[in-house]
Length: 321
Image: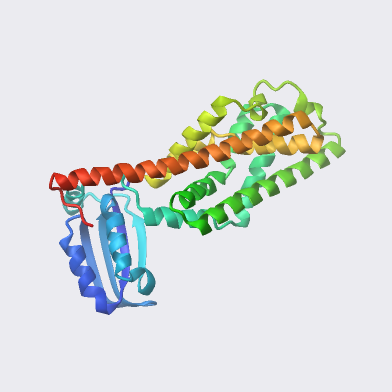
């Protein structure tokens, strides 16, 4: 976890003194540097500083009110290490723990990036679905895990949860559309590949309908499918908002979205109708469960953090509005 975030600001000259004085007066901000007139696009003063993670949302909200989002520039980066006494003093001045603070502007910005869509997203999702289809044919648990790791869909699911929670209709629509289009394309291309493999005699319907002790769970959802989807959704969204991206690997290998898509593609291409419904249900349960859990996680994070700050205010701790 990065306890300190670095801000690089371009401030219009008429607001430079106000912004600088406010940052200097806040004990949660340190390493403040000003370069008068250094910026050219947009024009203004460049101000750089380090802010504790707990205070970052407060500072960004205030900067937005000063018009820097529209008339200036705001860039945010994590600081890998800040061993100086000034940074340690700033961290002590901020109530709470860095892990508990959510930088909402960064979360929203990341969500829009995830929902943007690119050929790379479609390529990874298609490749992951194809790997999952091979896992079904060979009954390989290792390939199932590989397909889960390659699949890029969780970022879009998290973006959907952010859009729903923050009531951003455009983000919600873009995320949902990208999920649908991505899986439709991946399933269609995987089904086409399966038809070609069937034409040359590599696979037949028995490869899908035969007993599969290691991968049969993919098309047979049960109550635990929903439980795992909810837990994975909570863990995934929490890892993103808390800046712990390494925890996402565990999320990727716990949900059965991509394997279900691979099984669905094979079932359609080789025509195993009794498995089509199960695979589609498994896919739907995982996507819906992760999204709902993500929304609830975001709600609880905001509620818990605000409640914590209220308690600190009552006890006299410094918290900026």
